[in-house]
Amino acid sequence: MMKKKPWQRYLVASLIVSSLVSGWLLAQKKSPLKPGVQIVPATVRPGEKAELKVTLNLSSGMHINSYKPEDEFAIATELKVGEVPGLVLELPRYPSGKKHTYSYAPEGLTVYEGYVAIVLPLQVKKETKPGRYSIKGQLKWQPCDANVCYPPEKADIVALIHVK
Image (cartoon, rainbow, N blue to C red; front, side, top):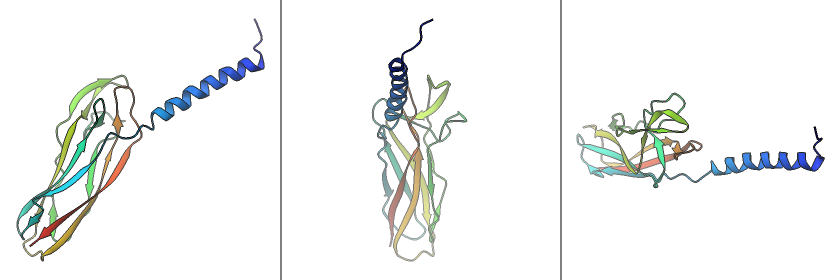
């Protein structure tokens, strides 16, 4: 058996470290998610209803886990919104995801692709005074492609509703 020379050990170690670092750098890819936020309608009267819409645009080849991804290790997409005096906020309505299998999830994951809209219905209380009300929250998601899932991300969500 031949002894490895120090430079050969160094070369092997360098190749291993290089492959690990390059894999980590690839996993730092910029998220495909560009959240948009709007209230429809933006102006309401006391007692009326509206919807907060959070839209997601995913680039081709990318997906995010659905609200219920059907895998215990997958990080779900989730919209959390704080209470707002004068408004009754319902639970967010998430779209149905599509089930796909991946090398890292052979049993399948339920995911969102392309354009996605999460809707949060709300109602202005009858006793709410006229003015502008700020709805604040946070959207969490985990972007993935067919080969790897990237670190989880989050974005603050802010929307204004005008009560007449």
